[in-house]
Length: 253
Length: 253
DNA sequence: ATCAATGTTCGGTAATGCCGAACGGTCGTC
DNA sequence: GACGACCGTTCGGCATTACCGAACATTGAT
Image 1: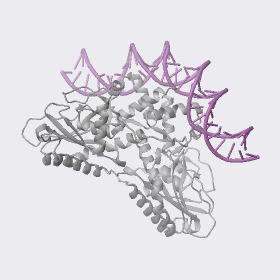
Image 2: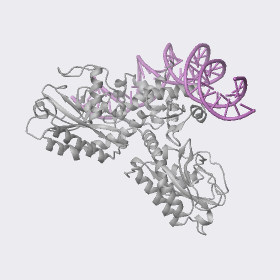
Image 3: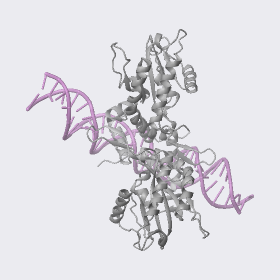
């Protein structure tokens, strides 16, 4: 029987220790509990801190579980429920808005479409479920990054898809800030010429964003003559996203 | 600037990958996504599986996040809220039952008392918060193990505290099974001569047990002449534990 | 001022993690 | 039924990495 990776086992032991009791421990106590050298324990904690699974209190120097780990668990639990609860709200949103509806989550630094409802008309459409989309050029993606779903960081490589695609980190940062402030995102012919989309965050337990809900369609139908999305469509999307969030048990903190 | 532990960083990357999208991936896809050799990826997954952070589907061979990791996140989030919500229910339980109330969680393979309400009389008492108690000899501990709070395993070393302490793994297993079936635990002079206690599980998000709520007092007051806990006291404890659970947002699955 | 404990850094050593190669199993195609 | 492609798994050699003891700077208590 082959062995296991010692340092991963040790890191897991550290995380388990931090998960219980008071939830915050000094380095020396962690080292003693696990019978490790302080230097060894420090190296493990430094790495766990680097990946966001642990954080250190600036004042006391004590360690506790970090947001990235908490996001992992919360994200995973809710993404599973997200799919099953989407049906109840995505169909009505498609009917109400008259546009195609998609729900996406983060996978490997991209948007994965996990649910797709066709635009309620007779036009030919293809099913997008499973499709991977860029984070910076889609409304769904912008929402997921702005709210750090699955602790995802803004992408560094910004590929061009249309003449209107965001290409610089500075422009992306400004856009993400605006998304976070307003509570919704849009992409106006940034991914596909002639197509616009609007999306809003879906929150899970503890208010963490676990997905994004969006509609998309011809830019002439989504936007007014100044290329601003129609506010009634934005409201429809946000209402539906909020309803799904409530179904998931999100509680704002 | 010192470096980080490469295998811990890689393990974290695997967990992040599994946290998003469909939540289940084949080994080859994980290896390709992270640009790792299959042997390397397998070693990491084997270790994560060993510590319960990942599990493998028997049929498809695909990997997904495991219960121990999900417990970590859920446990941590709820233990923090547990403390703040205890006050609302522990005081009334002490008044109603006339006994001391304690709430405990798992820390380093033991029970850590995180809240203590004195028995409402004039007798001298000492504050137990911070005290560590054994898992096998206390009602709080039996509940935590029976429901695998913080993924804790049954203790292997069973120390004797009184003539009635459980000392064999077989007897402990039988007792834990009974606790899981009935939804509450008791220790009748198993930890302290002349003292009996009753405890029930406190559930957090997703129904996972994050703590235990218990009362304790003289065995003559807690039990009838056959050494069975008075059922009205069991009901009081279970009611209060259920109320705290609801406050925490537990949803049975 | 002294002491004890903290978290952090550093460098030498050997133990460990990594990876290429090979294996057995499963599934789809011909 | 044979074959090829792909899967997850195992193994052993190698070189790099993780580990740990020692030392350090900081902080708080006496």
